[in-house]
Image (cartoon, rainbow, N blue to C red; front, side):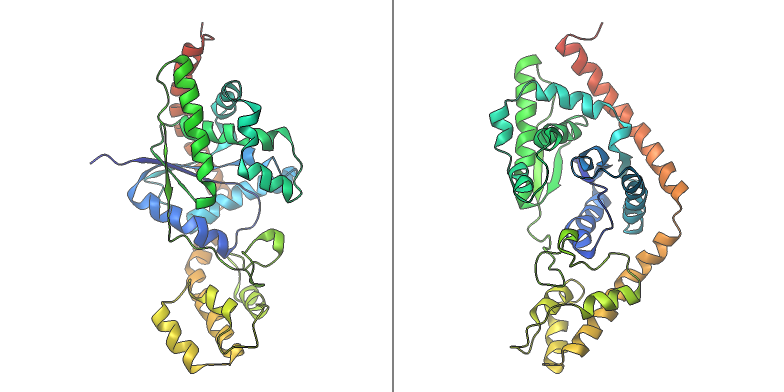
Length: 313
């Protein structure tokens, strides 16, 4: 049976936390156990908000280590750096000439980011067309996204339709893969875990870092069960196990937090150990090899695109 080709990606925007892991990294790692495709370090996308060259350079390498430590299967996944395949930005420009400004103005992500104070730069505005190029270059069948990102795939399908209508059948229209079980992880203050809120538990934290973060979790003194602690604990134990633990420690928030610290540390320790064994040179070698593989696929598609739009001589 034909395996569907998938593509996923991650912006190298900083240190990852357990919200990133359970919300995106773990589902992606699981997906690439049984599917083949590409995993992209989306460094050009990161430029819409990150303007620190040293930080971006370090984040690219560190995020490669993160995914390898989390178990990404390189037998099934081509791990590569977006900027190493220039065809992405070339195709994005072609798509920009096919869609209208009012069409791009409908993007929920653009509106949300501007509302949160991000500069309304042109890259942020045309982001959906670069993302469409990321996907369509590789004849991707399925793209895993959260429910709030469904529109991104709709934009990619629209770009494919616009090009196919103007220049002939060229691009496959991808499907979104929405996982209902993907966790929205609460932070230490009860809001969604986010670096911008300063409420995270780092993914590869030391035990001391885990302890400081967990002990800072805001608790509701009005009940026997601290909801924020319990919500994070559900990521590491079954509801059945937690029912027994929380019943026997009813009202003892300190004991419950100490149990959570132990569970997080036990879960993270093997990944943390694996991560320390991965060198910068290992990460760069994997990105170089992955970039060459991705470029082989992308350049073939772009050769066809250039011929169809009339610029190939």
